[in-house]
Image (cartoon, rainbow, N blue to C red; front, side, top):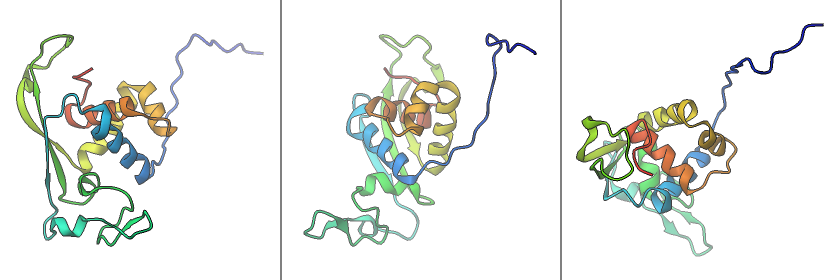
Length: 164
């Protein structure tokens, strides 16, 4: 009988489908807690042919938001716009490379607007899975919190953790 060498590194590749609600929840965690220490301003770019009214949500008197052309129940337009083709959230921050930043990429030094859209969110999930597996596990297992949301948002925008 052959013995298994447990010290040998084994890699297993899996494919996991994440629900829209899982990703939206992490975006809420980032914007409402995890990333608000480094986000300076937020603005939206609407998909072509839409207005903010298309994403406006109203309470129907029963605690459930409805009436939006793009109805995501309880989510604000800020959270749902980047999921639509052409929709973007512009996030302004200043990276000064002072304090605890050890490997500050000089290319991102200064004040910039970073784009959060469908492509950057997908890229952020992939980077998180490869570089930050503990936080990725929290996202996949739906046990994420403000820290998980912050790590994911930084992966989306900077392709690394720059803050915190």
